[in-house]
Length: 70
Image (cartoon, rainbow, N blue to C red; front, side, top):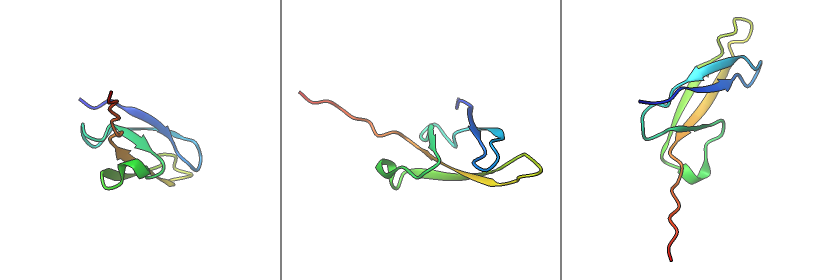
């Protein structure tokens, strides 16, 4: 089950809740992460503040795993 994440509107700061699109993309960023190129789900959330309604884009991705050798 995906965990709820809390973010704020980038325009007015009104908080909103977002859920990862699936279990493969649990982390979100306001900018498309370079290390996750090609494995990003872009989702747009409209601000719930009636005086704002500004869209906030979140880029959901899976963090790259680093494996130590040696």
